[in-house]
Length: 337
Length: 244
Image (cartoon, rainbow over all chains, first blue to last red; front, side, top):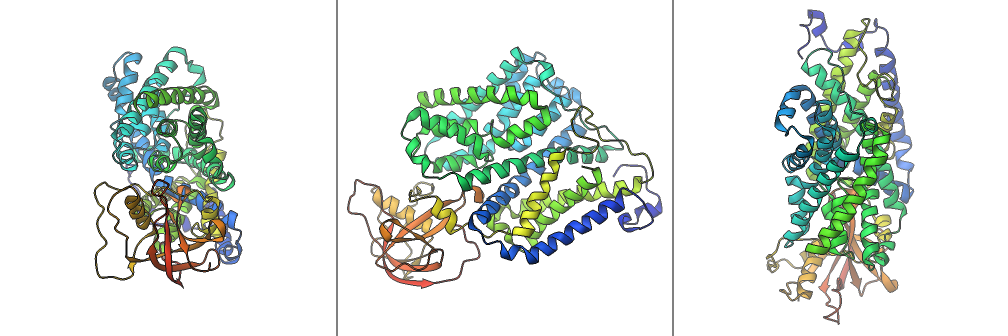
């Protein structure tokens, strides 16, 4: 806490329970208390009576996705807030080549170093733009980081034992897609499509700025993560898994199906290699497309990108990355797998 | 959403995560146990951030507080409306408290046999001698069947093994002893099942211990058959960690 030195009575916690104060605290505190009371009552009264199988399975999957993604989300949001607060803008401008066209591949390669999942990379890329990095380079980083970082490569190697070509193909195809998307945006993108996030105003010291940035990003990303969780849980419980096998026999249908499935399932890139390995009826190329598309385009990412960069950005960038990912993924797969 | 509400929501979410990790242990219904520590850390971060915000708001009370940034956003002062959705996981955790995935998910996965999980190469070890029947996870049983079928050491031949799982209906009126396996979290659970021969089916969803011997398929060219000739089926309680 680097704010002004507190007067003695301010150091006494918790300030929140003194009744003399007025809004906004007491209202919120009452609301909070009421919400907790409602939760306690439902826990005792409702929870034991929810016996519907599909609803239970849906809730389990929904909670699982939220809980699984939460540490990565919090880590990513904290990292992005820390970058916003601690790293001065000139570091980025010095680190990346001056020309945007050259900065794009460097930003893509930087994605190979920083571990992080896709939920985290969207706010991180937003933070980079707010710090003056060229949007095309930041977008390349956004696509590359969750797809080719060391954690993902290790996960892929574990999921496909004895098949290092799968790891290499994933790395190569993802990096190519990220760089191509960055260059395409550089050439054809217009600045009015993209809402460059402005970091929250600096009020108070670094800790205050960090806290505000983290809370703001968490509220955005968290809300959209829930949207993705709802969608994925619904698909998981509603779509018959038996449909999958019939489609796997037709090569182009298999590729397109897994590409669309990657979008719909919205699995964290840390986890998708294991899911892909489990899709046994499908060809290696289809699995590769699944692994290339998933970290770059899926429901929760679309929602996140729309939330942070604006809707007019998402409606252009999402189809661009999807087409590139399917094309590059199936080409690399056809050549090397 | 007001700033005060956002801070409270962070505390609430952190509290819900601490509830399922430290108080009830329900977290293993949703994710792998290894995520417990990162979850506790992230809950602590959320609570500290939220509490610091609440404390700050109380201290600034009565003074004009600068609005948060992001003037270009379509959300009002404070935060986006979508953030209200963060209440949903909290409500689901407390008000529904769903159990582990089980029969419903296993049946939905269909009769499609799941591939045996990947494993590090070069570890087709014989079962340690002595214990009879030898307790095996269903996943390991399937791995050993898979290995034997593909020309590696047939480590299950002649050994009585004990599998624990729940009952799912199988093909042609038969049944299987089944366990769900998490790759990452419950969202990608796959059903591992071993067909139980020579025993009448207990009620679907019932947890059982099955003692028996691996029964190889007749066709060495076909798919491996995960099945056992059964000697004893005893009802049991659901184990603490229901997933493999």
